Image (cartoon, rainbow, N blue to C red; front, side, top):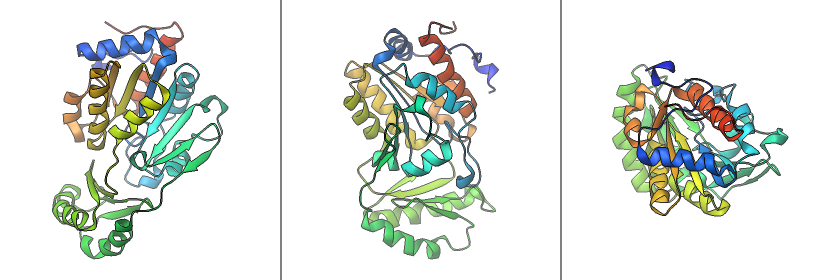
Length: 289
């Protein structure tokens, strides 16, 4: 499904398909100063690429975030990447208009604030060091590559000769390794990530919403790791905080459409939605009907 097939003009907000989503969007527009706008990085603000180090935010993403930053309670990027890596690849530093941006890395365990450029990072989990030593032997000839995030290890199969086959073959042994070392295994779009337990994007989003006193929440994501954040939006709604769940559409994870209120066409569509949201908050285009 293409960008225009989704009924979403670049200068207009799409109409959510759920009642709760429509209520969330209305709340975001009615009181922008109380809104928390958060998004994943890879696949949401930045297109998925074979080499994770080559990922870059969509050209329209930072301008859209900058337009929102001065109008809402908080703007955040919540990612499994290390916070400083997301900042570097996203080009989020050095923009005075993004002073209100927070980047929560390592699923919320790390925090970078644009206002002061400071990075807060916890000590590494001992299981990560053990996994780092064991992974080369476990991956064997699968062609999978390891992205060392410092506090986590991501096994990518996208560049393997048989990406889906390598993913399927590695899932069980990596799950066993995670269990033995006291780690969590997070599957995603042709990636299996070993990370410390007890933190996910849902917990990170909920804590940030509490910290900023959010009156409404928007979260955009594209992968299985974002399901926890989408569920957090549901729980916030139940607690009286309206919310909108945005799917950065992908054929690789089609089931996310069912867990969200509105679907857009990848990072390009997310950037357009955020820009349209800022425009509506400025008194511009309203939701399409």
